[in-house]
Structure formats: structure tokens, C-alpha cells
Image 1: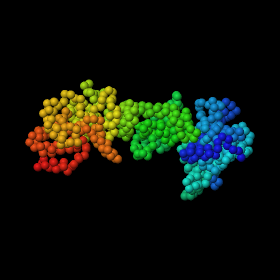
Image 2: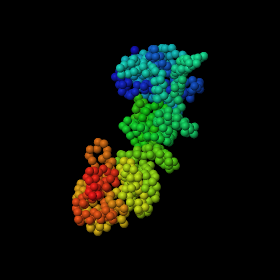
Image 3: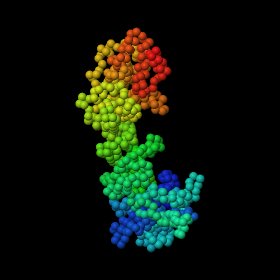
Image 4: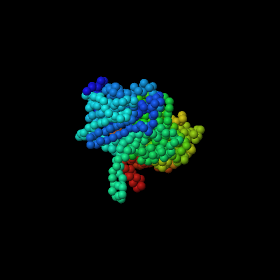
Length: 622
């Protein structure tokens, strides 16, 4: 028995137990190696006219012998000489495919998948013994390589009619933790091939058990074996776009289980340049049920030359586009030895950046050309875009700001920030907004009166993230955002006179003392026309933000907005308040409580003492 030249038993044990996350990967690796072997015949045929490369004669076969626990993977590829068996299989981590690629200076066309030489040894994760019988192209004799693991291997002559390679695995017995029987089951092998090797460019053949009606019988059935090609071979993303229909894209979406709905839009990318890659991306129509849970995993399927490398590559999508489904295939990625994990290299970052820009561009086109469809998308995933504006300290706000939509006071429909700014009157300084639970409730807010009377449009914020995102955005096209509840609306001609403030200072100070700790100030309103009272605020925390933050679970430290109680001094209510201040201070306390709680109710905030509120109402009615 010969010893492995390069590494010890410890290295082989480490590789099998640590490098590969899932044992099923062994089949992907062996099929990829078989595909490489056929590729080598193809390359030789390019320079050797004596080789007749007819693609139909080349395939990979999977055979199962359940009784003897054998799984065989064979190919009609170039095969190996005894020296190549020694060099490629006797030295851990030496790759014959990589050497072949370097010797032949292969850059374009068919790429060689297996370049690391470690994947073959993944067979020992599921097999007690691995036997390789190979006959090199043009050779007269075949040879057998055999090993039970890191202890060593043997090479001896063997019998094989045609050139190519057979890999025979003696599948391990089941243990308490591992059910190795699954790798002898037809359905399981089919599912692994479809998952990882569906787009290998040569047929993967396998005998499949089928059922049919017995000849001459009306109700008796019999089983029979039929050879089937398991893999699709030509992936949809390698076809020209003009060859494909909408139905083709929808079928692929369903086949890959990206969702149970129909995709709202697909994006087909064929990129050539610093990094070559192909991608098919989908914007779903409906939100996945677990989208806003910890269980949801973002990411795209990642292939290297048709071989699935990662089921969910999160690095290919920013969080704000995490709803996008689909796949990317590139032959330019630098992979680690297991082909299972990506090195975070420049190529991956280039692909991710290009994908991000393409998704944004397609959404902008949808917004411009298919408004109804975009609004449908936005209703489902708009909140995620707004989270994107708010998160990462606003670093993505320039990318996302033109994709945002908000209901508007003027048209009662969704508008973009660009549309809002484009119709602002010349004298309007700010982009005005109001926040609340629903459009109807916001529309009735007393704080909106003055802005509406000026003919200025108001954006309505009904999502809990809206105001946080806009605070992060700060300005849009050099226009600052301004809440209708802000202490100063910037509409100078509507300001209350200093005399009115001075005349009523004692009353306002008295009311403030009654509401000690609840409001920062009581003052004459600069915005109210028909309503008697409202709350305004100063500072970074708005009243709506206070409501949202304090409603969150596990938020023990309650936040507090700096509230200002504003009174309409032209309302009949104010005359009653002044009269009470002159004649009945106890009644002022009741009025103050009622006005403050009325302002809270208008804002959708809870009344602090409902019993006292109802008692005060009863006292006034009496």
C-alpha cells in the first residue's frame, strides 16, 4: 500500500469533517470532476483532428447497487494513466484539472470546474472505501486506484473496455446520527443532482424505476426500469433573451421555488467586462410570509459555471433589496477548495455592485413606465426601501430617495419626492409632511389647516418608519422637510402678534404650571383657524415618533417629545378660558385638563387618566 504523499490522516479528517457543511456535496464534486474529464476530450478535439467529438457520445452515469451498498459515478471522459492516478489522487489537494487548464492556457469557452483537487476526497464522508477504475484516452490498459481513507491507497491493473473513469463508493452503514442509506435511494440522488448539478452541460443518466399497466390487464401494474437524463443541461440564463418568453421565466421561477406567486418583474443580465456573469433576478408579487422574521434568509443562488456553490449568497444583495429572488452564474469567482464558500474578493464585490445598480435602474423604469405596477410593488415592499434609507446612518439614502412614494394631501394618491418638489410654489420653503396612523386621520389633523390654506401640498406618513427615514434624509433637492406640527412652519405672515402673546402670558404660564412635566410650553397658536387646540413639538423627537417608540415591546426607557400646547385665541373656547382665569381658577384647571387630553386624542396618544377626564367632562356639563 502506498502512502499519501502530501498530507497526513489529520488533514484528510479535517477536510472531511470541517470543509464541507453538508455531506450531499460529495455527489456534486464527483459529477463536476466527471464533467471536467469530458471537457478535456473537447479541448483535445480542438487541436487533434483524429478525435471525433460528438457530444451525444459523452455523458455521466449514476448506478446504484442497494444490496451491496455500492454507488457508481462513471463518465466517458479522457480517463487517467497510472501516473495521473498517482499524481491526482495520491497527492491530496493536487488538481489535474488545474494543471490541464494551465498547460493548455484555457481562458474562454468551456471552463474547467474542478481546479482544487480536494473535492474528490469528499467521497470519504459517505464511503468506507473508494475505488477508481480509469482508462486513459488512447491507452490499451486500465488501472484501479483504491483507498479506505488516510491510511493510504493501492494502484494496480484493471479491466475496462472503453476510455473514461468509474468511481465506486462503498456506502457506510447507518449510525445513530447519520442515515447513509439515503445515498442509495433513487429519489434522494435525483434531488441532489437537480439541486447542485442540474446545469452540468453533459447528460447525467440514471436508471429510474417506473410503473405501468401490465399488458393485457385493466387493473394490474408492474414496475420497470427506464434510463432517464436527470439534469436540464442548458440553463435558462445561458439562452438569448429573444429565445425566451414570459412563460419561460415564470416556469423557472416556479421550478426553483423562489415563491408561490407570479413574479411581478424579471431581470435577465448577461454581463461581460472585468467580471463575466449571468443572472436572472425576480421581484416577487407578494411578500414571503416570514419576510420580517429572523428566519428569513436573503440572498441569491450562486453558481460557478453551472454548478451550484451557495443556495443563499447574502453578499450579492443589500438588505434594502432583500426581497429580490434569483440566481447568479460566473466563471470568474475565486472559490475556496471546497467550492462551498466564497472568498470575499473583488469579483464578488463588482458583481454585487452591478446587481444593486441594475435592480435600482429597473425599479426606476417600472416607476416611470408602469406606475400602477410599481405602486403595487411599493405597497408590498416600500417599507423595506424606507428602512434602507434609515439604516446604516443614511449611507444609502441617495440610492433610494427617488424610489420613495407617499400619499399626498392634494391628489389623495401616491407621489414621489420629485413630483412634490416639481409643483411647489416659488415662495414655498419646505417640503411639508404630517404623520399619523391613517390617511383619513392625518387629513383631519388641526395642524394641517394653515398649510392647506396656503395651497401647499402635504405628504402623509402612515408607516412607522416614514418619519425616521425622512429625518435621516434631511433634505431633497435642497428643500428641507418640515412637519406640520413643527414649532415654526416658516409661514411668516400667519404669526400671532407679540402683543397677543404678552396679553395672555399669565394665563399661559398658569396652564403650564397645571400641566407641569407634560408640556414644555403653552402658547397662542400660529396655525389653528377653526380648531380650538393642538399639540406642536420642538426638537428631534416628534410626537408621532414618541408614540411609535413607546409602543415597541421591550422598550423600558420611554422617550418623550417636547410638547407644546397651542390654543386658538380666536376660537370661542378661548373667551371661556379667559373668563374662568379671571373669575374661577378651579374651572381653569378643568378646562386645561380637557384641552390637553383633547389634543392627545387628536394625536392618537393615550389619555393619562381616563377617569379624571370623564369626571371633568361631567363637571362642565353640570
